[in-house]
Length: 211
Image (cartoon, helix red, strand yellow):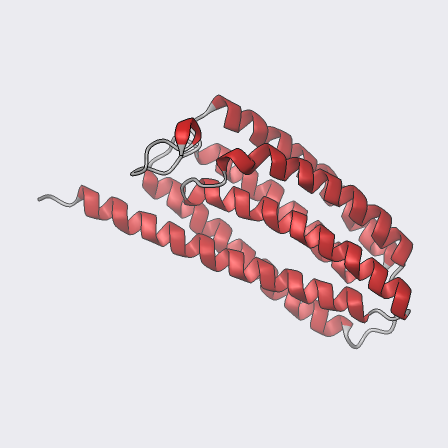
């Protein structure tokens, strides 16, 4: 994969000053957008915006963990990746449950707030994706960062469609549908991260076994 990912036999592990600088920028973007969306989600009464805000918070935490374990042993890095995978799983389950509860809540989200904040968040996520795309094919720790960034971009595009749907139908169902789709995205990403982390841990143990 060239200079960013090492040779064909070893995935990029994050040991790059350029990668670390990019990661710091993405952490800052995610922290800012979490604060913006959690307030806007409450103001607009949008479950999709609140789910996306939670995603921003999870990503900022995930990226911080990823940065902290760069250069550590395979065991430490895979443990961090597994923890992040489990946190995504729990996040997905929470959003599913919260969405199910909101199905019985009567209230129409503010479509214009959803649209404006969704556009701002989409811009932040596109910037994050562009910063990290060079390093998308790394070990489980690096891979989890890329998947979270990709999820954010997809999620914000979905929020934009939800805003259009709420405005067009004058119901909250598009908002709830998008929140449920985002929850499913969290769950599938969690499975991918956990599987890769376990695979890398097994490979490391195999390499350490005496011949």
